[in-house]
Image (cartoon, rainbow, N blue to C red):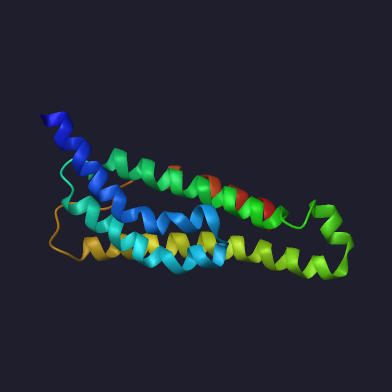
Length: 150
């Protein structure tokens, strides 16, 4: 029935994104940066052709969940060597800490850059569907996180 078709369609498209989501859970911000262009292309393709999952609500939710996991990944990366003040006291760890903070800020910048590239690509195409998502909902938490660590 219709519900079964929707479930199959959603699984099909979300499965194509699985390999791009894996680094969010098991890698560092640099590895995430490497998969972002392919991830965005796949989301753009999915949004334009998926019958059920290609709605602004579903794709916005996907982006928000991805953003939240990037923040979790960044927090883990920053705290991996211990508490911030302990890292700041040890010279060897201080440079690692500063590098990790910078990686997280760059991840946010590249994430947004890739999003806006995909958005512009759609606007230049004949597709009737455009990226018209609430960007504050998608990027707001990451922006706030980056302001805190700058």
